[in-house]
Length: 285
Ligand SMILES: [Zn+2]
Image (cartoon, protein in one colour):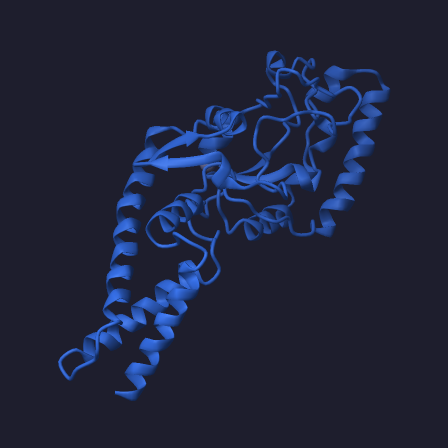
């Protein structure tokens, strides 16, 4: 859901992948595709892969943005392009899938079990695009499922939220929502709760920020000190490094911040100047 940058793959994966690709190549040269369709892909399962993927996207599901539970049964190592086509109707490749990408770092991400099951072996392409499985070259494929690590991916151009409901603004976003069932009731409900909670938090921040324009008196100093700490905390957590992708449903949060607080390019510099002035007023009182 939120964009994230790839970190370097674990070295252990590279070694395992090379060995696995040799075994795959043997299976293929025996000209027995059915052997490969039952191939036990294991290189991507090494513990370093999960550890690195967790670090890369703050232990969140790459599709829905939920924070993942520590239980391994809840989080899955997900293949953006499916390694196998269990239901050959999906990819029309006789069970093969994108087998050579099974342990390719750029094809791996971490997802929750619900998104993982919903996606299955689906990998929708644009109606005009050809699927390049036999030639093992995906460069010309026009994938409709959004890849959140693409450098030009801007989540705000693709998704918008309204009372917890998700809306796809582009064809790719709509396909991604359908493929991973990002419209499911449980997600709508938690996103709605977060919307109410976070909107209130933003409005409290603005209310207290507005109060810094008043003079400090003996009656208000204690309240102002306490409120200032909370203002600083909010600023550090949500505005200093905007957008902050480490939070659950970061895109929803980003959208609320834009609507409530960051209305212009000047907003953040104005907030910094008000906070500095309040700091000065409190120290000089
Ligand atoms: Zn998910």
